[in-house]
Amino acid sequence: MINKRISLGFLVIAIVLIVFGLNAYYSTASDFSRFFTGTPTDKSLWLLVGGLAVGAAGFIGLVRR
Image (cartoon, rainbow, N blue to C red; front, side, top):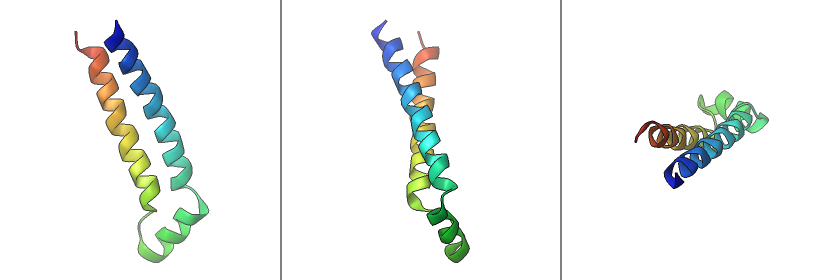
């Protein structure tokens, strides 16, 4: 029961990280970074990757018995 609560918490955290990552990805700073370097800011990429990793861990935690 506790593991399922932790997994659900991970999924909630993952959603928050992905939303912040998408906001950072489409920000003005990220647009300037893409214009000059061809890549978005590191902050946006780390938020998105972190959100996906935490989401995967939460999903695996829910699926396992």
